[in-house]
Image: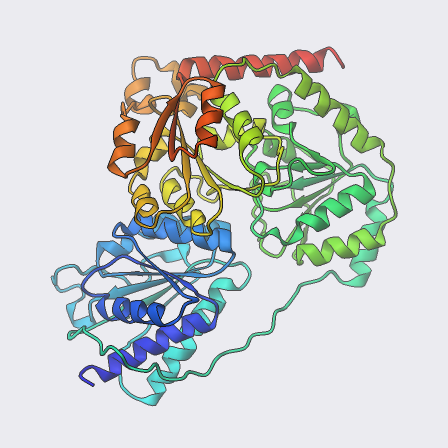
Length: 561
């Protein structure tokens, strides 16, 4: 063999990742990453359970990996060449860090003698991602000997286990490589010693559970379900709510809407008034999941003086409302099972009060029967297939889904709600679509512009993704913010119209395209599986519609005080 050490050690690296559950690899090609990329491609060809995707845009590639890991609930590996290519991963890693998504980043690098000395395509890659990764480790694939070989097999597995360990998140393996970079192909990978790690479940101590049961009985308990990071505790939360008749204020990303005792109109309620009617005021709050989309809910939460329990091993006191009084760092499903078993059924009155006000608000929301940003969400809620997936862009789309998506069918909803950016949205949705089935993306024109390159992955791999673009020619959310009053500067600095011709965008990426102007046309386009659907909106009209809806809610509440 011409390059034996590099070849065998790279195989050990790959085998270690695969041994701990990495089945998806995303490669952004480059010269320095040649040996790892070639041996990965060879391994994927030989092992049918592995999948390899090539994305030449590193920023898109990282968000694509994020989408796969987020929806498959499994670790995903990224590979890039040296230099600024590695820096392009940072936005997606920040999102993965904040939402606890396990990514393993393989950054190939120039060797030490070519670092900080003027060599081309070389930047300082040691700890490149700072606090956005859980761990950064250097591995030398070109050092011979059994000791280094064993270390590579061990550390590659350890990196995946670190990424998966609570709280999950991204890790970096930096791989400095010297020429020659061409590995030997058609070599049987050496065997490695596989690490077996037994799962550990954090449970509440019996005496603590008994004390909690005593504090919750005969109380008005409000359950808050924020964006979920794992679907394992949905059924348990619904079972607790049903048995005890405790209402769940369910974020759209909690994937609970339309089920059982879930309340969906609370964001409109808190927008209309900053305090709850006395009948709805809780005596105890149990909070699950990530930070809710609803800023008015979080503002209300920050004003509470009742006990607030933050439940879940991933939470790490991530509570900007600072309302939390008790942290239960336990496995949610085990906790919910134990609590539901221990508690007797409770009175239905508190839930009935919440349900009545929710029904009253729904009856008052008379949205014009035209195609607008609100009815776009309502149409998706009504028309998308059962068991489909909907990825939602940040900015206005996620807020409109929060307010107007009722959950008429059982679907999975996703969004990048860690850093809340509009970058990488298309690529993340494309990663979601690798699961197959029916997949949809709701996005604004400005977010689409930020990540049009993500459409290349949809095209390259023929991914089943329907993209619904609300085109209001700019940043629609800024019309709702105070800077909208700076009329002389608003359009240039915040409205930022790009005048995109979405028909040409669709043609560039070989997507079928349809512009729709009525609800019926929109429903027909969805039924016909159009790949890019444009919904035209006007920012001023949209602002007026939303303000009118809030006034309607305020009037309804005033009439029933």
